Image (tube, rainbow, N blue to C red; front, top):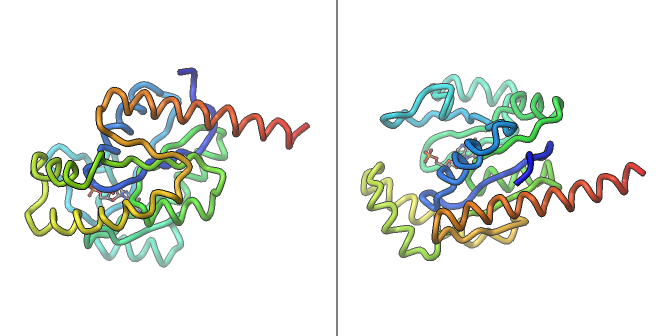
Length: 199
Ligand code: 5GP
């Protein structure tokens, strides 16, 4: 695929659907793309780095940022705060660069309201059973945490219609190809419209 043009890409979907892996592959193959690093009050997992995976902050700091209107959107996901930095996203867009956000479905819904033209992509598991198996295999959550995420996944799967594109992540390589394909198609449409408006 050619270089990604200045667009806002949202990757969303239930936990363990594979959105982080697909997002990492996209960033590795497209150095022109900026990743919006979210703020969270969740504790870092082993191998996660502050300022790379997330900005890990206390509840007090997060709530201070809410009161200062620092977030483009924020949500409580599985009992922790997660939020997208407004200034980070606006700066990249103002500089005419493409940016990718990976957020839960509530966050995606809020961003789509603000940027209805954005390239919104829902990553779905082949089925709920497959998702449950993936949760068990990755083993990064406690049983209680896993149950919370499975219940939330049921609710998130019912909202895929708000997204422009859905990718069923059955096979990683195939899904990655589809991801590039939908971004490519979106760019063609988006820039065609843009040229018409600016003629
Ligand atoms: P995890 O704890 O597994 O890293 O992320 C939990 C969920 O929070 C995932 O669905 C992830 O996409 C979502 N998430 C990460 N950053 C943000 C954010 O800034 N805003 C929202 N609304 N969700 C986020």
